[in-house]
Image 1 (cartoon, rainbow, N blue to C red):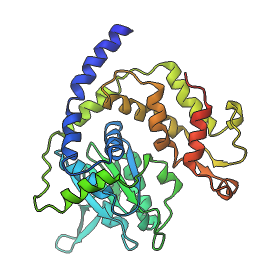
Image 2: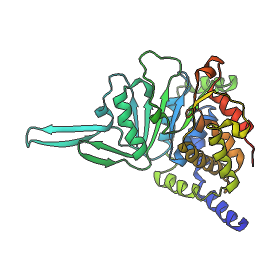
Image 3: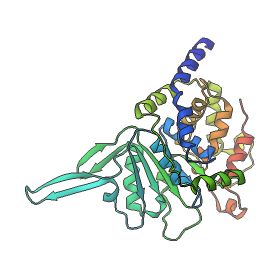
Length: 328
């Protein structure tokens, strides 16, 4: 087994060689935000959509745009608004009076990286159109179904403080996001760097340092990372602890209304491997699971009125679970 892991380690080292170049190039524009940039790369490697939540001005949109600029791949920014229609997103059928036939006009969803800006401003019909693209990696227009390009990733942003003109995202759609990130304010030192960089007259240029083919090769390599059965059981224990806390000695009472689904187990497994891959490791440790776990679970748990009355957040409940479940 040690020899096998050593071989995988060398393979991972080769396939992850582009990661420092990519993070360095993103760092030419984005100051700090290491957590955000790393999670974007995890989503890219693990083929998982990401929901980014934060107040305006924290470089959410800029980070996604910079990531796309550093990869030789397609990118579309879609501004979600209350009057957006499904056809504006996926495309529509165009009637030709000349020959009496309908032709397909594909929408902006037919790209590799999709920035769904302020996703919670679009109505339910648009969200349902996005569901098929996110889960099946395909779009149906009329009676035809079209496969989306690979890689395909939805990176959505939403504002947590402004509720006027917004729609709550359907739970089925929220569950399809691998990670939900909470972006916070920069430090005073980072703020000083941001001030200098963003007020300079020198244009910020991002070079393309990797290709979609290299990303797909890295994904294949990531799947070869070794995960011990004890770590797999740890992931299952974490997810099951949201459903039956007493079994794991957790005193959560009736604080959790809706528990994590099996999709949480799958995404926690893949995200933990991607977390190890970014560190050039050929194996997953429990620390990988603990560090990425809150981002995988925070949007899959819905609290009861009792929890809200006690002013508890899902992050606090998730922290209790990770502190209470035995680490292998």
